[in-house]
Length: 168
Image (cartoon, rainbow, N blue to C red; front, side):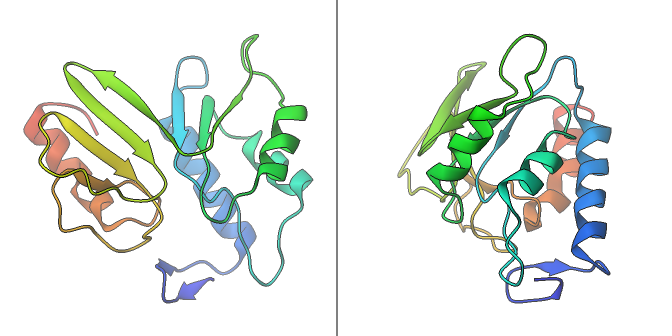
């Protein structure tokens, strides 16, 4: 799935180079002592050489912070069970937490519905659906925000943060 494919451009020389770039970017952004990250599905996939559970654990263990996994269409319960059983821990707590469908975070009178698949919420106020699944595509609905690693919306993050007076 490297190169310019039907899902999203992944312009790396190898899967190992892509994995290391993602680990480096994650760890540059996430504080290992304080941050909790919501991973919105599809933990690991390589159709030509599916990684073993131990390979996936080795990569995930390098990532800073506590991670809440929301099951994607390429994830399966056996992987979640393996990660739960082999959880390396995080400051006396589990490093890995798991959700089969999604979870809701409430902050400053806003609900963030975290799912793998985009949801059609209808007319909403102060409710956003943060999702993955659709790779380098966008939903034509303002309340549905693709936050996947290969989402086109990522290009908008610095501009939105500047409008809100935040640091991206």
